[in-house]
Image 1 (cartoon, rainbow, N blue to C red):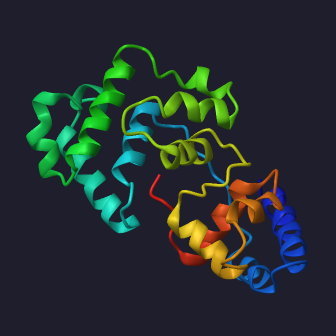
Image 2: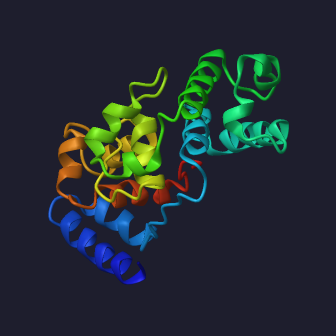
Length: 205
């Protein structure tokens, strides 16, 4: 992966230099970055952690998730996220909407409907459609799971405010970031990693 990282770093600098010197400079300063997907935890666990971090700073997301893990103790999260534990979970800092989403994820997992091996065989678009059928799971969460859990190297998470705003600032506010990111296919996930690394704001996954 180190060789891939260095090759992509060089390639990204070349691409960015053709149309956005500020972006090229940011890539130089931020990289090479490492792409380290991690599927060591079960998929429902990772989904719930992604949901917990929605629209929060990295620090806040880590704090809240730490409270959840402490409250669950030895109990598997798919067993802990039930309505009977609503008050405990709310005291951890979870909103009612996030709690509803997590309980729904856990319920689907207990029913055997969230199998990582099945989702791994899908492309990002197919996987996103499946995941966003879950109440409260949006495109941002689907993007994070594809990047950080399944290791898809070609996902541009345009719904991520930090990545999108940084790319726009380094290129042109008038240019759609989705179109800009297309220049870096099939390694758009790496572009997001560069934007987060530049800001020192990699999502808590």
